[in-house]
Length: 247
Image 1 (cartoon, rainbow, N blue to C red):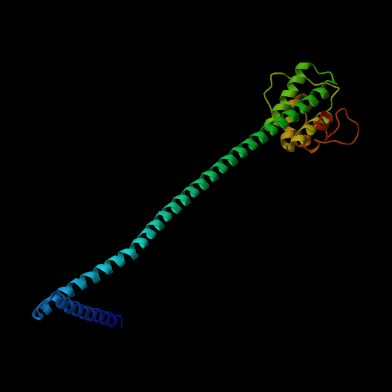
Image 2: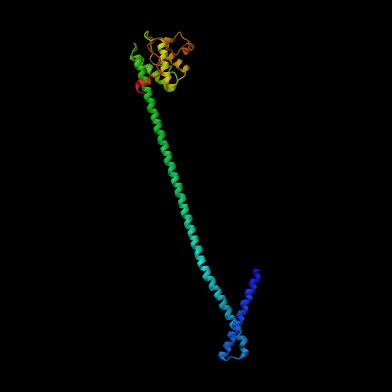
């Protein structure tokens, strides 16, 4: 269908061109008194001139139509490039912002962790100092000398810090009649309770630290009676010893 339309359009143009060329040639021959025998030649020249003008007009019209379109396409391409560049810059900015946020978050997290660690260390130091003060205050009431009290404090420090018993000591703690096994076991239990230390390690601690009091006692016997709440004893069971020292 399109091909037929094209052929019809071309034939119409050719017919019009021939008619115009004939009319123009006839008029030129009359005006210039040219012999009629030359009429076909004049018609041919006119026909060629008309075809040239036709194609020239077609070219001009195509140029006029396509030039704005090409400019528009170029403008669109430039706009697209600008849009792509802006989008790329925006993406890069978003990545940089996200990166800075992550770095800030990491820094704040590390800072908070450091503060938390320092706070815990301060609390542990305060707690240990309170336990050692309780130890000194407890044994100052009896007839132990300063070196023995110092050794007990060192054994307590090792006990609560490492959850183990300091078996090798430089100072030997002599047995004093003012202190009983029950009082010493209550003391050891009070210390262990603050740090949630198990009964086996606590039993080993009290036997090793106050060895002369437990020479004839077995581990199982001491383990069964670490905590005595009945009767009156010089060192009583006290679950709240830390509160007395402001902890």
